[in-house]
Image 1: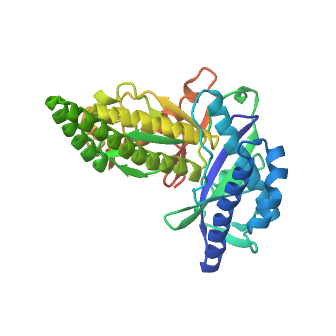
Image 2: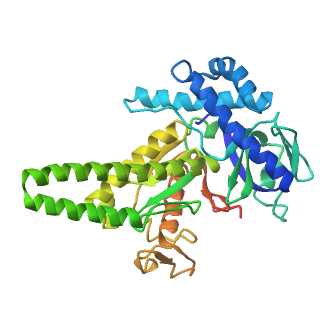
Image 3: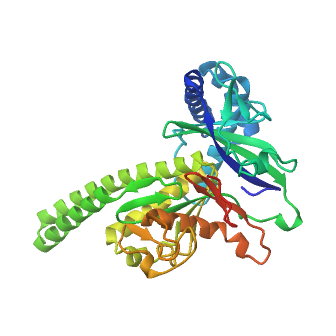
Length: 396
């Protein structure tokens, strides 16, 4: 997704009243319908914006309540998703038609206007709503460095719903200078940690429990061991049936988890989803063979689903991600007293161990550019409260 611009996203909560909430909810619902309709029409036929727009625009306008510009943006979103599938297919991977489930809607400079009084005007299916941006009091807050700058210009943004609150991911861009060109280290990163207690945890504090998976995997392994020991033909048939049920069950669990991880990346306008290197994950986590297979399958599912939305999926080195403090950087075995707890013996910060690791994984990718000889990286890590850059500057 690299181009000739440095891009940033300022995540800002909106203050909305009941009527505005209702209009925004309806707009998000119609946006998802419009994207799906355009995708259904273009799937197998075309994938460029210039082709999908004339093919699907009239139908999107007729069968949804989207305005003209949002209908155009919906066709462009469909084109982007289909292009991702085509690229994946060209690499010999399986693809399926994209579906749109994330509670988001795209905005551009025609459908969104920012004002100096700290408010934003957003197009909806019926009329524009003008909402207050919940900006920090400090004049040097994270958003202000972009909102008050003559260097950064507003570009495509995303409205999303999270835990009943509305967040506007305001997109900004500026031209790259000569030393910044041709780098792929730009954008927003979502860190993901895989484990036993929690199947996956993101740097935005989204937890996917692994307890049920662990329990059922152990049951499957006990059944398998018993049938292997019996060794009869009937036991072999039962083993095949049991293995089939296991495979279907685990794949369904991983399907839902991978969808949720990609949706989380979309909510936070992430360009990259970063996992730790899976090579030795069984040794690091004490996982069974079944967990190792599940981790690999989850990674692959996230990879192909994310690519359909133009999001890259990467792996970074796993050394000390579970022992390093994401707040101060101090690394020690004593920081991890139990599987689930993280307590830094230096700065005394406390966190869920998997959440701490997820932030370390994401930040390790963010710092890749800063560690290169050209130092051209401009990435930022997505957190629940905003983003943090490699220099440690964070929005809260």
